[in-house]
Each structure stands twice: as C-alpha cells, then as structure tokens.
Length: 106
Image (tube, rainbow, N blue to C red; front, side):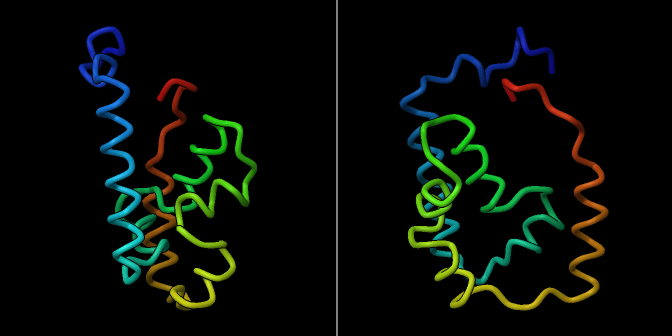
C-alpha cells in the first residue's frame, strides 16, 4: 500500500495507543505464546515491540522491556520462557527472512 494513501496514517493517535496497549495486555495474558513461536509465525515478538517502544520514546532497553512484559525481562524469561526446539528455531529463521527492511515510519 502506498504510504500516502495508507489509512493507518489517518488513525487517531489515541485510538492507536489504546489498540497498542490492548495488544500488549493480550500478550502479557498469553504467557504460553512463546516469543520464538511469535517470531516463527509473524516475524516479530515481545522483544521487537520493546525495541520499537525504545526507538519511539525516551526509554532505555530495560525500561522498554519492562513496559511490554509487565515485569523485568529476566523475571519473565525465568518464569515463562521455555527452551526453543530446533523446529521452532527453523520456523523463526524462515519467518524473519521474510521481514523486508522497513522505513523509519513503519
């Protein structure tokens, strides 16, 4: 879609922020959805969201991750992240390869 005609660019910032917060809360609730699986399906995960928050605002990496995870990342990882299987890692590798470089506005 042409950036000049993308309806996303006309979305009110308050609406976008509300939808983003709902997405984050959904991911916090779905602790069973592993980052490696999110990466394998969609090419992004909670860490990606944290990076985008860090890039967009005044937070450092640790603060951005705590914002997304709802707790320090090390704590979340210890309680909720399992070991990735070779199959999960391969799906993630293939999925990430599909990620095209995106402009800073994307």
